[in-house]
Image (tube, rainbow, N blue to C red; front, side, top):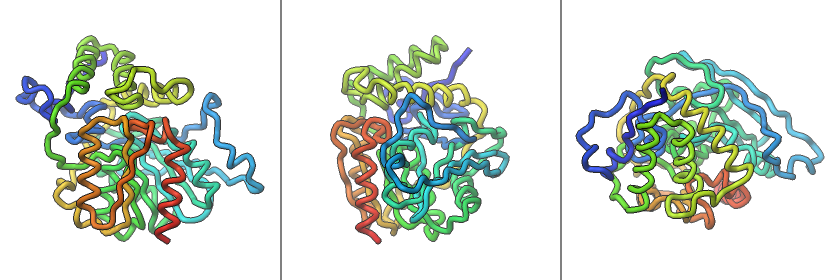
Length: 336
């Protein structure tokens, strides 16, 4: 039986009747991405799915970049890493409903623009192998960078990956040259205000959890995070949706196999300490509380800019890679 206690909307005070529940040992998939998300996650090598076409930049390049898959050991985990290209390093950190495959389309474009791109599956995602002991996600990131011989890098983080990027920028600022935060979660975010579209989807999610139907949970999460809570279900179709469902189903299956993340304290109160150049991106179809949070980051981080991505929801690497990738490379070119 697949069963987890939904907590993300209780943390956000979307359902007052749930507010008195004790927090679960692990937060749910939605919690991993939301303001109250208490976890970050895991790894091993995954090859590109033939059903999702690669960008043409690599095929047309006179030099085909070498792709290196490696396994990095970190505090009881074996983290799978993909390292491709040459140039200024980008370390891309996936969302809590994905794994490193979400970056494949962007990777091709970033490598074509002269960057080295490193991606890895956090604990509890992809093909990770990990124990159930508590762990520090920033230490995992540092272990990956050390194994790849990277002293400092640009961090590109989506949602939960954005939370990790922020924690790393505060904890190891000397290792971070710039930040790109895509609909980022933030540790210590104040409770969000509810809106009708979220409450309705949360009800569907809770019913799926109660029934133990992992496929229904996956379907509801695809609607919320991929389509956008105010958009029709199925807005994003084809290979992108298939990839989301495959990545998130794997994460749902692994959810109880991972230890608790060691909290580094509320980053929300320390955002003004971030001194790296920062680009904040949010999709126009994302949930309202995510948009409000992104605006707060742009107003609080000293050297930050906010850009809204049209026609995208919470996961631009999946539904708008052709818009996202150039935004990142243009931002980095302007900060060299």
